Picture 1 (tube, helix red, strand yellow):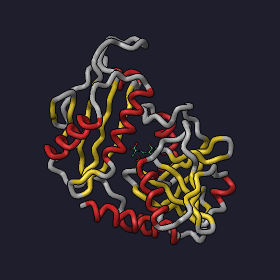
Picture 2 (picture 1 turned 180 degrees about the vertical axis):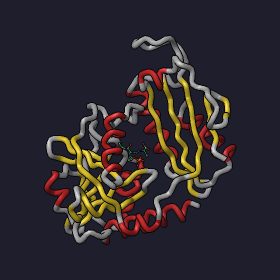
Picture 3 (picture 1 turned 120 degrees about the horizontal axis):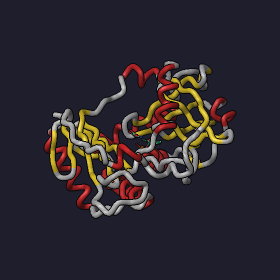
Picture 4 (picture 1 turned 45 degrees about the horizontal axis):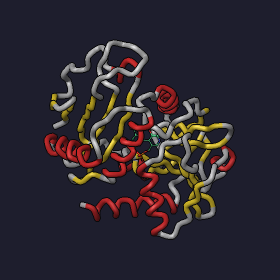
Length: 280
Ligand code: PDD
């Protein structure tokens, strides 16, 4: 059963619990993570928690939890929900205090939801998805998984309205990432992706793909990819906790390579699935 959690209390998801002066919804003053569980086992849980802690430090949230206590909290919530294939959304905000831009001296708020994982339809995955490109209009600190997602949701909705899964964001003619995914280009059997910097989220799935590519001896090159290189790629794929490794077969209505999911993308995805099977 899907459940919610707020500051030590489990609730049902339709309960009204957020006070008006909660800084998450007034200022977007907080950070979050999305974590996938397969057959009751979390995928790269410690890496997600470490990123959550890093995001919290980056915006000066006075968190008191550490890796162990977050791990306990998340595992307990999933056990309580009793859903073995689920997504955990965990959010930390600067708490509840009369609206004022300055930091209040109050404890942070931690909320969570546990819901059944929404998987991408098998046929859709087999065919590949479409994308558009858009200017990256976000701020300078996209390595922080912050609640402020307005440019992301506007671009993602534009993609959806055009029958596409994702908007690939471009800064000064180079790919940064997707609105909710990291982006990769395959050319002559080698995988290229944007190097980590303050301009992109250090994806946990990206970390897994890098490890898999190294294991399979596929070149994984962290190098800026131009719009031209994107459009002339043999293969393009995106990754995220929810989409896993997903082939992109059309960008701005132009076919990528020969318009079907490519060999390298498929090989990486198959090995990704084996990694998950092995951890069950
Ligand atoms: N989004 N880049 C952005 C901007 C993201 O929002 C995400 C994930 C990723 C991929 O990160 P990871 O592999 O760690 O999930 C890259 C999550 C799933 C979301 O906002 O729902």
